[in-house]
Image 1 (cartoon, rainbow, N blue to C red):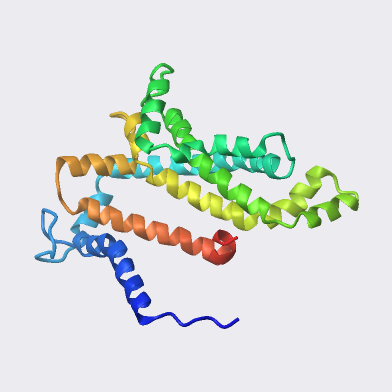
Image 2: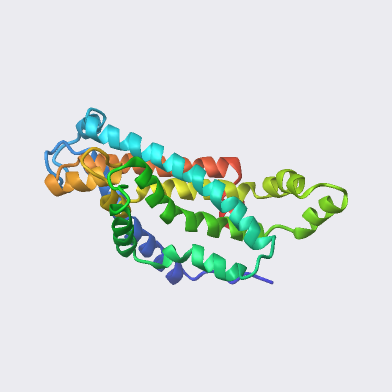
Length: 264
């Protein structure tokens, strides 16, 4: 079947749409190198002082460390919980598997502000506000549906015949899972890890409800900084976060390939 050529009009429309979507990113990069003491475009001069200001800001660096540690812990916990849950839903054929999957991924359908308020009400009575383990639980509520959805999709696309062949040759269910299923799920696991880390690291609304004066994450610290003063410091942090995101995508591409990871 021959592919129809794409018309110049569609190419032009796609280019304009991509330019519109990337406009904030395009603008924030030159602003981060501004020599001005306030956010303006175009900058009157060029300087790296706002990058130096970020690395010398102990509050921002502390928030960066908290966000990184939090995202790593949430990523590991989401894998530990979602991997056996997805296997039980897809392979064990438990009763009401589709209903269970819909229930576990229901937080994806709720507005984040509503979910954050609900978590705040529950955590207030349990003494979890302003605590690190409270942040872990709150982020896990948000990240786990993503992890479960990606892993169930990845597992559903695997050939069942390979696992059945290993079982008929005498391998125990645990051996089949460890030596056959897990290697085949590697792209899905990598995708889940990358997505869980980025979602947790970037989560701001839930964190606003759960953080306190002694514990904050980088997105919350950036929000509070912008609320207090409008200088290019936040732009420089944003550029560093963009670079971090691109680095994660590059690692995924180099390890298993973006096509295998995100395309079923």
